[in-house]
Image 1 (cartoon, rainbow, N blue to C red):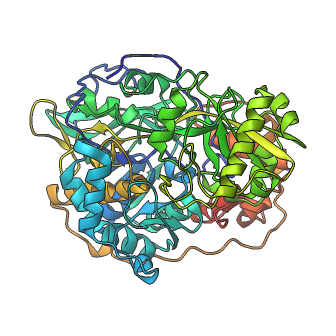
Image 2 (spheres, one colour):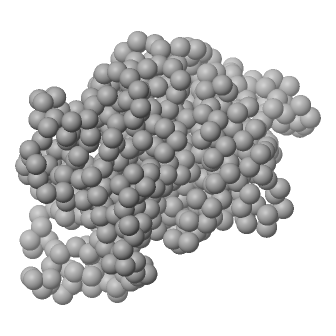
Length: 631
């Protein structure tokens, strides 16, 4: 592993759900992983952790409040919570934020699933055997073959059937690099469309309780067994202890911790000069530190899935966070004004090519006819007009000009080189073959079909990109039941992990088939919960066996006189611990001059005894900022 360090802990401005002080939505992350190398026995550097004071060990006896504490309300944590509660467990979900979803809400919502009704209806023939071969061929020797077989065999029932039963709609198929057939399932509503039905089901379940704005600083132990968590309620600074029969860590990866990312940077890649942060806000390695402190170990942290398609997030005033963005029809040119890679290549190939450039940056060049092909990962970017307004019309991120010489001057590229590059590209399109990088034509190496179009219709656009962090494919070592393994032998009693924290159970090895991140988070979350239920011999009870109620649609807008009590212009500037999402979302309210009734109509007319937020009603308003209904 590389020991290069640089960069700082990333701060993020995630954008917007409208939530008042007691709100609920969005969390730390989602996934799990294991490996056969890169073992670490100490807390990872740079992780946000509290010092080990010894208070975690042999905690004084207290009443057990839950069968299971789930740390993190991303898609892995929510999957685990619902699975465990449905089996009869009393579950408490603890999250640092006031909102659910973690990295999943930032994602495109695409899930790799094998041999589904959608595939069959589309004429796609797939099988677990074929999918398993793809996993091993693409990911290499570090693929955990047991988990890869299981994913290929069970993804249809454990992911597709379960999620559609909760109300998720899979509507399109794609074929990312490494897949023999189209098995990437697009979710209606992108990431929010995938995770919101799961959150609703958890909120409705009487066996699940949420603790928001609550950070877990340590694990409680009774001898070698984990018996709960200790931490801080961020809005008050109050310390707390929560006793439970088991703890499941679902805190996400570490790709928002630049110190940790750089320390474990893949040795076969040049170190990035500028590296944007593109992971979940709370994906800082906190769960890694919790697990290693009690004897767990880490593996394959150098297996990271980062992208070349980083665009500085216009919502981040510190310019540290990045979006995963690209125009699928543009050409990429380096500082010399030349193409340097097949722009349709797999993420790992494109990143390697970018890191060889000096400087390590490039510009996407496209024209007015290709403007529509610009895409940004994340539910909120499906909103019509969001990309044009916030990116392409933003002079800090994009340049446009009536001619290519003007465009070259605007972005500081050599005019003659850029003109020649575009002329040569247009000429190759006329002849039907990319003889430079085989992006199209009879010898095309593009993983996905690509229909090239000439760059000829002004205005012309240029958008600058940098490397961006995204996902961890290594992490806390777990067994086949998602029990956390001890660095010496066996597993740690009472401790489980799921999702990106485990590196998605190493189903990807060194390279991802894409769509296996969200899918593996769901699978490992459910698997971990089943292990908890089996290990604790929890019995299903009639008390928890009631049908889930459908959430009521939002009420008709009414006048809500919020401003009389809530001074938003002042509140959004206070930077209070535990209010980050409240501040960022309501800053958007003020910026766009939105009405409180868009999200809080259900609180009118004002009635003091009943004046409190309804989690389900509020969850229905996520689309105000995260346009889930969009494509």
